[in-house]
Image 1 (cartoon, each protein chain N blue to C red):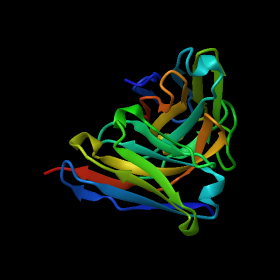
Image 2 (spheres, rainbow over the protein chains, first blue to last red; image 1 turned 135 degrees about the vertical axis):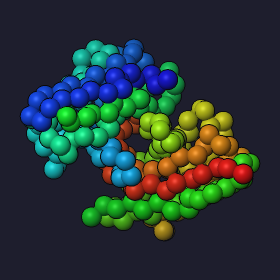
Image 3 (cartoon, rainbow over the protein chains, first blue to last red; image 1 turned 30 degrees about the vertical axis):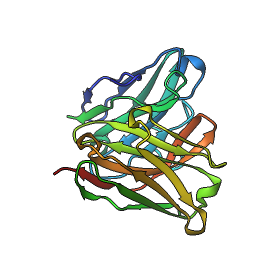
Image 4 (tube, each protein chain N blue to C red; image 1 turned 90 degrees about the horizontal axis):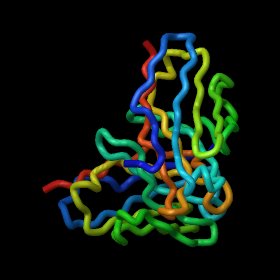
Length: 111
Length: 120
């Protein structure tokens, strides 16, 4: 069980907007540590999507956006496309564990 | 261009040892955080170890001291020494570059991963 909780799956039709939640606690998000998001397709290298809560690396489409408030964070994908069908992970640091932690992952299915 | 290439995975018997390598290009491993993350079959990503720029290392408590991360600056390569391997260490092991300050680190470049299978 990860200290960062994500829904196992979300789905949406092409063009729709989906959001993925990531619930933390006082020892990670609540302590001010940032949330970062990754996209992972099986058999490939994970890809950084959002860093520092809201920032997109160069080359990541603007339809990906991140937010964080209190002990929760979320990733939104607007204008869902077929290529967004993948696993998504949130990541942060937990001071109680003294470890970098990932959420359990969310499978996004484009219907 | 930043690239990370892992090697050294394979089939190993329980109790055995293995050393993974991560050859970096396009940047210096001594100037960045470097980390190992693994993904067991059907599971999510799990952080394993991190190496700070100043040489400090940290490992997941669950590994109970069996794994050690290190680097060879002359070869621009990071290693993961894995001892007393168990079946639940079976996973794809990814090397990644870390960016940030102290604990607030994100991982901006990743390798393709190397598969470690622990089985008799």
